[in-house]
Image 1: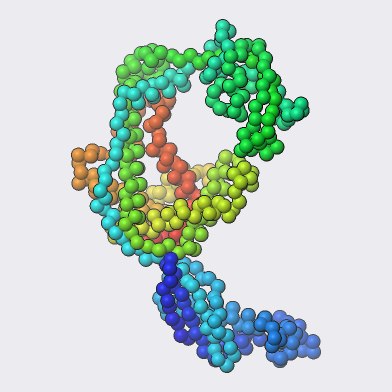
Image 2: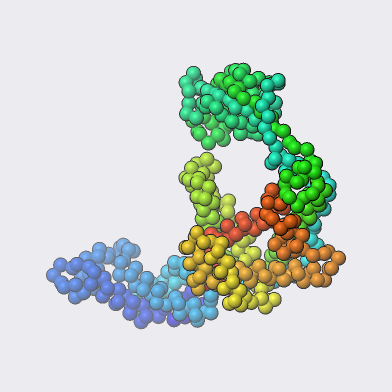
Amino acid sequence: MNVTTTPAPRSTVVLEVELPADRLQLAIDESVRRLGRRTRVPGFRPGKAPRVMLERALGVRRDNPANPIYDEAKDQLFTATMANALEEADLDALTIPDPEWLRFEEGQGATYRVAVPVRPEVTLGDYAGFPFAPEIEEIDDAKVDSVIDELRDQHASLRAVEDRPVQKDDWVVISFEGTRDGQPFEGGSAERFPLVVGRGRMIPGFEEALVGLSTGEEKDFDVTFPDDYPDQELAGKPAHFHVTVREIREKVLPEADDAFAQSIGASFTDVEALRADIRRRLEANARDHARHEFSDRIIEYAVGNATLEVPDVLIDQEVEVMHDELRMRLAEQGIPYDEYARITGKDDAAFHAEYREPAEHRVRVLMVLSKIADAEGVEIPDSEIDAEIARARQRYANNPRLVSYFESERGRSYLRSTMRRTQVVERLIDRWLEAHPEAGALPHLEEDPSAGLIGGTPEDTAELAAGREAGANAREQASGAAEQAAVEQSAVEAAEGGELA
């Protein structure tokens, strides 16, 4: 067997394997024996018919290139020789495509060619000397005021309105009946329908038509359903509505005084204590957010300076992972995938085309971070994997399938490679912060003492969620994607046998 290799674009190597005549003949003879045992030839017991009779039974003719004997022999030859050819060429194949047979002649030999995608070689550029610094949002009085206003809105009460008509932001109860061409349509009527005017819950023009109506007043008006309305029977069509206003209520916000602060939590003696707590929390969130943005910029800097060619097979596999993530998110929201595809006007091919560029970027990020982890000597001991699995048991107590995956060797390998990539970025951030003490600390929210509870009771800060959980929510969303990737495994993880170490 003679093996030659030729480099090709996108981390692909063209492998050409030449087989001698005697090796080809052995494969053909074995093909005859196998087909002879499976093919009924009149006058002969299974496996005893001469080749010429077997060929006649199989319909093999000189003027017809189709030859089941040769096809069987090709499959056997390729299966038997490909692994040895890869070993001889020292190639780490990601997948084995079908071969192209260049020659297949009895008495002469055979040659096949196959374009093999191999693990990309990553050449790192600069990844630690990034020319930028973390950007921490400044928390001023206006931002604190905004949170105070949100808390006031959360504690607002509704007061019945009798001395004026409907205004924007009023809470109303209406009855309505919609018709098209004089006929009612499904979902077009309600008896006591609650609505906040001006929030855009109804189709364009509907809520605007309520402004100026008083309690008990009726009105007829026409509107047109948007072209992208989910119900295709109504999309872009005009409709007539008859509406009666049943109730009008307005929201009354409490004053931002000491009594209001005390209603938020017993530890807040006055409004200034509440404002101070909000400011500390916003500042802690700003530092956490700055760290995550800094991390993203470092990753993009490293990927932009690295050199690698990503083979199509890894991109295709990552596209499938992203498609599966979409299906998972839709299922969690109770949205049928087919209905979502119909509303968006996209089929599987359209989704795949949309995902292809971000899928390639994801693969690049994974490969580059793994290479940096190698360069930095980042290793994850078994004790940390065990601790992560213990946390997963608690976090995913209602998902035994995922927990079982994490506990498996493949799952442990996934966790190890994921944690390596996370820790290498954290190491780069901490190293930069040590060299630039003027930047100050950038702790995660869970590590920042200033983000703790005042007074030690959850009730004190239960509703101070405005803004401060942005970083935690982002990580939670990332964790949801990680959960799907853990079950499905990303293209790169699968290509590397579950680990990029």
